Image 1 (cartoon, rainbow, N blue to C red):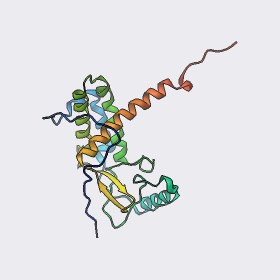
Image 2 (spheres, rainbow, N blue to C red):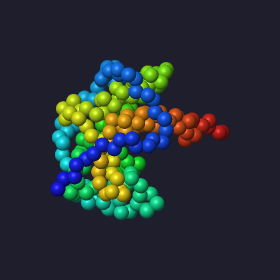
Image 3 (cartoon, rainbow, N blue to C red):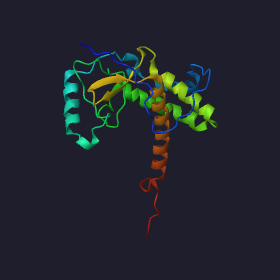
Image 4 (spheres, rainbow, N blue to C red):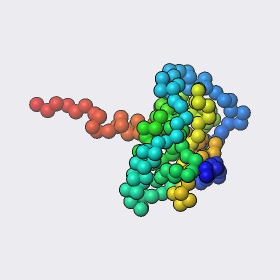
Length: 199
């Protein structure tokens, strides 16, 4: 029996997020202006809503078992065969790298990367909120597959749940800021600096 996925609402957030502007347009213009070709990858157009294979489910279970108990939070995921769960084109929210190569997660990272220039150029909180809204709209709607779902595994209840709009928006905003900080750290890394040759 397939369990019904329910959106998690009013989940506590670790940090304050920018307010969503009233009357925010469903805009693709911002992201398309940044890099219109990023959403036209062949594999994105050809993706089919294929459930995760039995082999993948087994492998993910083994990975979850190997995680120390101290690290087994809600982000430590296990696939339940009798539970409605993520498909290849969906986005799985996890700190682990287990789902890193899923097409849906790859597409989400590309969308975030494409939105970085617009987000950095936004001067006000309202402008940043508009970029987040546009990025969220792009991430949640595939040009050929339609609506994309964001999933999280509740380890305590041993079930998959879909995120609500507020949670997805928080994830998009966090992903944008995290990628910017990662880029800054990489640029400042001593290993990236050119050292003078000592004769």
